[in-house]
Image 1 (cartoon, rainbow, N blue to C red):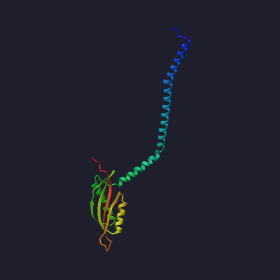
Image 2 (cartoon, rainbow, N blue to C red):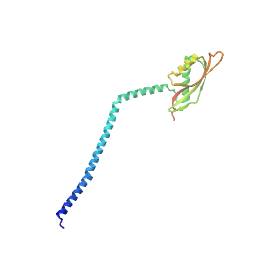
Image 3 (cartoon, rainbow, N blue to C red):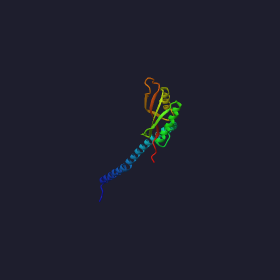
Length: 186
């Protein structure tokens, strides 16, 4: 079978078109996809390098903030009550209150340990204190509680007058609360 020159041209054109299709489909398009993926990877990596460079440039500032946070943590831990349990922490509050009462020349008449309450990562440990005083000594007592090294609050305060005709002496019943870290579960 003899192929005519016209058919030869068609066959050559068909083989050329098929070769061009294979070349474009399996070489050019994958090369373009690979190039665009590399460009996207490069852009992503440039952004990551930029981000990490900013973080590294802020390292000194972050170290200072970390030191301040550690100091604040130490200060907070020092202001919390000592003791493994709420009852031991209540004893720590009592010691603090007794010391403050002595410095304020107040004689505590009764102390009652109340139920503790969990609040987030902390436990509130309240005690109820009752004493008789005048307004000046009571003011000094409350001021000393609020400015003590321990973190103490006064959530309840009840004041009544002993003698209505001579209201110099007052009977004070207050709840003083301190805070401790949650008891370890073991």
